[in-house]
Length: 166
Image (cartoon, rainbow, N blue to C red; front, side, top):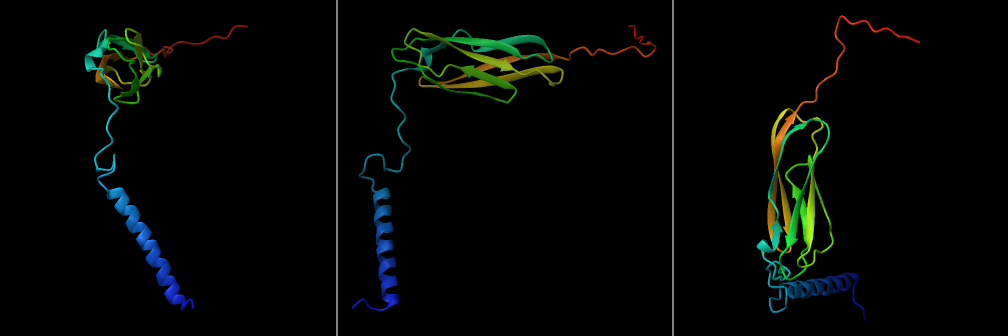
């Protein structure tokens, strides 16, 4: 016969436990490719860091007026023998915004990272920001610096009378 309800439940739990044990064994089997517990291998590439050749890694804005964005362009050449892919451009803060093409840059081709520094609401004084560029050639850090000058305020002198004319 089928036995009692308790026996049926015990049999079901035993099967579930065996399935879990088999899954754990499969996940821990170090003889399987990619399951040795190490991180997945990075894609192989023959590009080197020098293959991502920027014209300059630094830009000095000098003194900029508070309000409008300060914008610059970092140009580069792919000196490698494979397409260059910019995977990420991360600024050190939210007031600095890098933009770039997601398309691969062919060997010998050129590209650019445009950087906008938002000056609106910034206090007067110097700034130094970095932009970390991650590509299939490695990681490069670009730097921008400058000084924000407060925008002049416009005010009406105290002893001035405004006259309306029609």
